[in-house]
Image 1 (cartoon, rainbow, N blue to C red):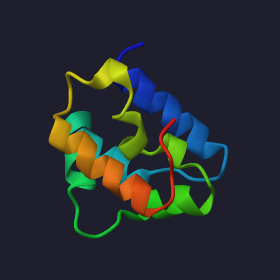
Image 2 (tube, rainbow, N blue to C red; image 1 turned 90 degrees about the vertical axis):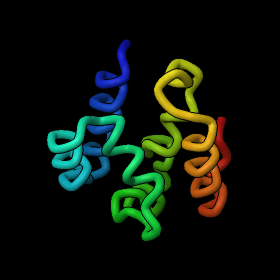
Image 3 (cartoon, rainbow, N blue to C red; image 1 turned 180 degrees about the vertical axis):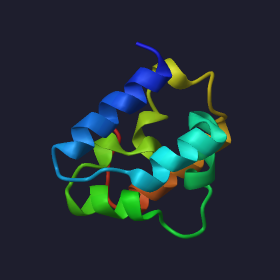
Image 4 (cartoon, helix red, strand yellow; image 1 turned 45 degrees about the vertical axis):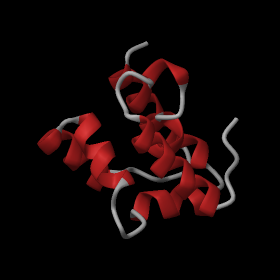
Length: 96
């Protein structure tokens, strides 16, 4: 599986809880998936999609969590992963 497919699969799972990440999907079209993710993880304000996933106890579907997966280490820097990991930790999510 490639990264785009992994993200698309996560979006399909999000729809099962009634959430469609319209803002993120638009950002992907405008900036590409990786740049969109970097904009989200470095955002000072917590993205609304992250909050929605947290409220539904599905932070496993968040981009912050997905970029922690070993398969994508070459796509993101260690700093990217640390920033994302901190956000997850701040919301009580433990990476598996």
